[in-house]
Amino acid sequence: MATHLTVTGTTHLSPSLLRVHLRSDDLSAFVGSEFTDRYVKLVFPVDGRPLPEPLDMRALRGTLPPEQLPVVRTYTALSPDVAAGTLDIDFVVHGDEGVAGPWAARARPGDTLVANGPGGGYRPDPGADWHLLVADESALPAVTAALADLGPDAVVHVVALVDSGEHEVALPVPEAGSVTWVRRTTGGDLAEAVAALAFPSGRVHAFVHGEAEVVMRRIRPLLLRERGVRREDLSISGYWRDGRTEEGFREWKSALAREEAAG
Ligand SMILES: Cc1cc2nc3c(=O)[nH]c(=O)nc-3n(C[C@H](O)[C@H](O)[C@H](O)COP(=O)(O)OP(=O)(O)OC[C@H]3O[C@@H](n4cnc5c(N)ncnc54)[C@H](O)[C@@H]3O)c2cc1C
Image 1 (tube, rainbow, N blue to C red):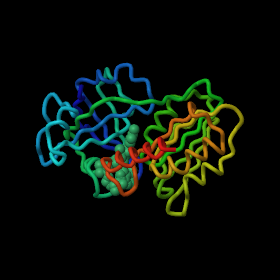
Image 2: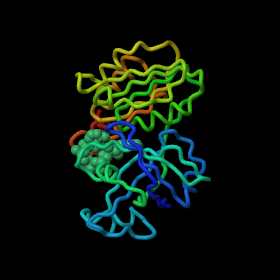
Image 3: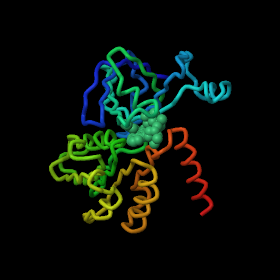
Image 4: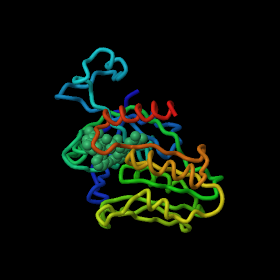
């Protein structure tokens, strides 16, 4: 069932991260949604063509040519309050290219959005000895949600990539937590920062998401092979791929899966 959302306002969290405040008369799709990385599929009309009601993307894919299909983009849904009918989405504003980022940059109260979902797969395991959260800007919303879910005594290390100091955002880190900011403009490298991190002893539960090449080809082998993180304790995936739209990124993911299946 699609959720219909209306923009009520926006807040700049940093020069590149924009929080869009949304409301809906019906957030029932979020009842029982327990994952902190809960995400929705935002559906954008193309060429001013209205979205059909009810919205069934699978049926549309079977009937419309690709260029007429609505554009689908994936975003983390923050703090859904079913009773109040409110939720937030933090958008990386990454220039004029694409659909969702530019939409958010122009968003004004009264603008509307349609969302399918939510899906999700991660919530910090309270039984873990410590938590590792690694992200670029696209996964900072999910990291924020994970931090908000952790107890006050949780041990957590956040490693986060942003352009520069002014792009750092306030994170609700517990007392025993730390944040390592990695800055692109001064040559910072997310994978190197993870490699340099001193791992506390005990079982880690890790959440690692961001640009796909960095996350899947550099950080994943580092964590699994060099640091011995157990597969079941690792939530890891690319959230976007540099130089590709989300459609192109889906092809990249299929190619990676074929590569891995072939060994
Ligand atoms: C589960 C999940 C949750 C996600 N949650 C969020 C979220 O909460 N907030 C968020 O901002 N993103 C999030 N993303 C990433 C988001 O879906 C992609 O960044 C998406 O490609 C943006 O769509 P677009 O229409 O703006 O750009 P596209 O049309 O997909 O791409 C256009 C161009 O912009 C580039 N581009 C795309 N994203 C970025 C970026 N982040 N930084 C720099 N260049 C970029 C592409 O490489 C391409 O060259 C999430 C992804 C997943 C899979």
